[in-house]
Length: 113
Image 1 (cartoon, rainbow, N blue to C red):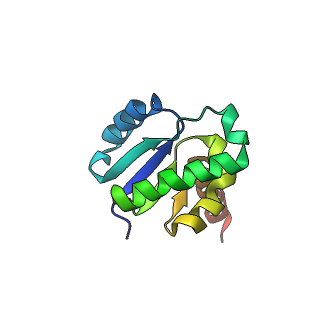
Image 2: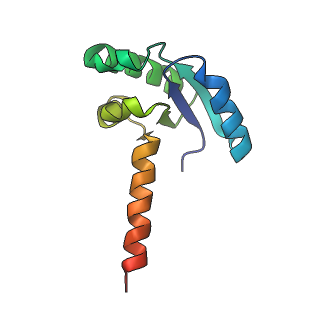
């Protein structure tokens, strides 16, 4: 079971907002770290540079901060989730994809006989 998670933010300004959200959810003590890529949303379209930055940041969260799973802190990172998970060897969660999967699951359960 995953005990500690890390977050990859796009910019440092996002981190305090994330900390407030995690504290409100009661999971702040499980946060291993929140590290920013330092790349704006428009810069995420440079696939090679973004993947390199995501991998470097994810490795730091995993190896230095002790994250056992990584959460992508911007919906613009969704296309990199699977490749980053393969590169890091830990679960990588993209919140929009996770929410959609949960919604589909709820609909399927509601329709089950």
